[in-house]
Image (cartoon, rainbow, N blue to C red; front, side, top):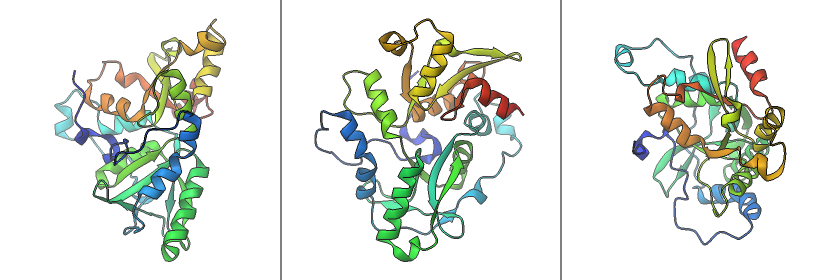
Length: 273
């Protein structure tokens, strides 16, 4: 099946590729990753736009409509449920509204930035305070879960993720020969598929260290290159698109995203409680 068009991007997100041509990346992927946040902040317009409601807009899923009953595809709330519990960090004003920026390269005027590391959100907050002191007054870093973010696409807010640079480095090491990575890296292994209480779980990890720890518990390939060969890497954006376009019982509805630092069993117990 051909990949969906960019209009089908989850979260109404802008494409993760650089908005304009950039010089050849440095040969050291870690050095490139460390400049990731600076690159995105410096490429955004200095004009911050009107804030939009943040957490208050993340309402629980409503009843499924008739149009969904005629489709075998996963409903938005079902996709969101797989993302439950994974935090990202953004900047909100004193009224708990998203601080949005405009990106002249893409034409987006209401772009929210979501960081996978709290320290990157702290850097974003410092950037807001420096470029727009009045807007930055009372602004703060706020955590929000990915399932809430996913449902916010109905509000028309566009988002761009700022991945963990360390995980970009890890993804590049697994995909030897690449010098760049588009999107948020996620990691998977067929060895970790679990059946529990008559349900099948296919875990997706945001940190390579977490999946390696799980594999050491279950696999004889406990170290080095043998362990890495059991790990597949992809992007969060592509996985979400495939969940949206594939039917139920196709295997994509078995995916469950594991928050950083947690194990599969721990996360299942928490979301099932």
